[in-house]
Length: 107
Image 1 (spheres, rainbow, N blue to C red):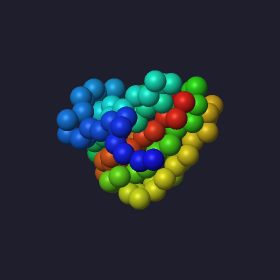
Image 2: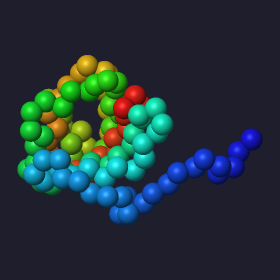
Image 3: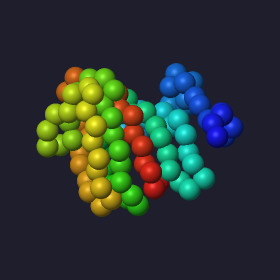
Image 4: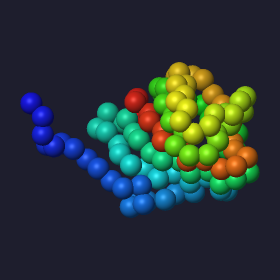
Protein backbone atom coordinates (compact mmCIF):
# COMPACT_ATOMS: atom_id res chain seq x y z
CA UNK A 1 0.00 0.00 0.00
CA UNK A 2 1.16 3.54 -0.63
CA UNK A 3 0.32 6.86 0.88
CA UNK A 4 2.27 9.57 2.56
CA UNK A 5 2.13 8.20 6.12
CA UNK A 6 5.60 8.57 7.59
CA UNK A 7 6.85 10.88 4.85
CA UNK A 8 9.21 13.64 5.96
CA UNK A 9 10.10 16.57 3.75
CA UNK A 10 11.94 19.83 3.87
CA UNK A 11 12.97 22.48 1.36
CA UNK A 12 16.71 23.08 1.15
CA UNK A 13 16.13 26.80 1.74
CA UNK A 14 14.28 26.01 4.97
CA UNK A 15 16.98 23.69 6.35
CA UNK A 16 19.27 25.13 9.04
CA UNK A 17 22.73 26.13 7.82
CA UNK A 18 25.95 25.26 9.66
CA UNK A 19 29.41 26.25 8.44
CA UNK A 20 31.74 23.26 8.92
CA UNK A 21 34.84 24.92 7.43
CA UNK A 22 35.38 28.34 5.82
CA UNK A 23 33.24 28.43 2.67
CA UNK A 24 31.70 24.98 3.32
CA UNK A 25 28.17 24.74 4.68
CA UNK A 26 25.94 21.81 5.51
CA UNK A 27 22.13 21.85 5.46
CA UNK A 28 20.72 18.77 7.23
CA UNK A 29 17.56 17.53 5.53
CA UNK A 30 16.70 14.31 7.40
CA UNK A 31 18.02 11.97 10.08
CA UNK A 32 16.59 8.49 10.50
CA UNK A 33 16.05 6.62 13.74
CA UNK A 34 18.98 4.34 12.85
CA UNK A 35 21.40 7.27 12.30
CA UNK A 36 21.09 7.45 8.52
CA UNK A 37 21.10 11.03 7.29
CA UNK A 38 20.64 13.16 4.20
CA UNK A 39 22.08 16.62 3.73
CA UNK A 40 23.08 19.23 1.21
CA UNK A 41 26.69 20.41 1.23
CA UNK A 42 27.45 23.80 -0.32
CA UNK A 43 31.04 24.62 -1.20
CA UNK A 44 32.10 28.12 -2.26
CA UNK A 45 34.64 28.59 -5.07
CA UNK A 46 38.16 27.79 -3.85
CA UNK A 47 37.02 26.03 -0.66
CA UNK A 48 38.69 22.91 0.70
CA UNK A 49 37.88 20.48 3.53
CA UNK A 50 40.34 20.76 6.40
CA UNK A 51 42.04 17.37 6.76
CA UNK A 52 40.78 14.01 5.54
CA UNK A 53 37.07 13.25 5.26
CA UNK A 54 36.96 9.62 6.46
CA UNK A 55 33.77 7.66 5.82
CA UNK A 56 32.87 6.06 9.13
CA UNK A 57 30.92 4.13 10.33
CA UNK A 58 29.50 3.46 6.88
CA UNK A 59 29.61 4.56 3.26
CA UNK A 60 28.91 7.97 1.78
CA UNK A 61 26.73 8.48 -1.29
CA UNK A 62 27.19 11.78 -3.15
CA UNK A 63 25.32 13.34 -6.07
CA UNK A 64 26.81 16.49 -7.58
CA UNK A 65 23.81 18.80 -8.02
CA UNK A 66 25.64 21.86 -9.39
CA UNK A 67 29.18 22.99 -10.14
CA UNK A 68 32.25 20.75 -10.11
CA UNK A 69 33.34 18.73 -7.09
CA UNK A 70 36.96 17.62 -6.72
CA UNK A 71 37.62 14.69 -4.37
CA UNK A 72 41.36 15.27 -4.09
CA UNK A 73 41.99 13.01 -7.09
CA UNK A 74 39.72 14.15 -9.93
CA UNK A 75 36.93 16.52 -10.93
CA UNK A 76 33.30 15.38 -10.88
CA UNK A 77 30.86 17.68 -12.77
CA UNK A 78 27.17 18.18 -12.04
CA UNK A 79 25.20 15.00 -12.65
CA UNK A 80 27.91 12.71 -11.23
CA UNK A 81 27.13 10.07 -8.57
CA UNK A 82 29.88 8.84 -6.25
CA UNK A 83 29.83 5.90 -3.83
CA UNK A 84 32.57 5.98 -1.16
CA UNK A 85 32.74 2.72 0.82
CA UNK A 86 33.12 2.63 4.60
CA UNK A 87 36.73 3.29 5.61
CA UNK A 88 37.58 5.22 2.45
CA UNK A 89 38.59 8.88 2.55
CA UNK A 90 39.09 11.94 0.38
CA UNK A 91 39.75 15.68 0.64
CA UNK A 92 36.64 17.48 -0.67
CA UNK A 93 37.43 20.68 -2.56
CA UNK A 94 36.26 22.77 -5.48
CA UNK A 95 37.68 25.42 -7.76
CA UNK A 96 34.42 26.80 -9.14
CA UNK A 97 32.08 25.93 -6.26
CA UNK A 98 29.53 23.14 -6.03
CA UNK A 99 26.39 21.85 -4.36
CA UNK A 100 26.21 18.21 -3.30
CA UNK A 101 23.44 15.95 -2.05
CA UNK A 102 25.05 13.61 0.48
CA UNK A 103 23.47 10.50 1.99
CA UNK A 104 24.91 8.41 4.81
CA UNK A 105 22.92 5.15 4.94
CA UNK A 106 24.61 4.05 8.18
CA UNK A 107 25.18 7.43 9.81
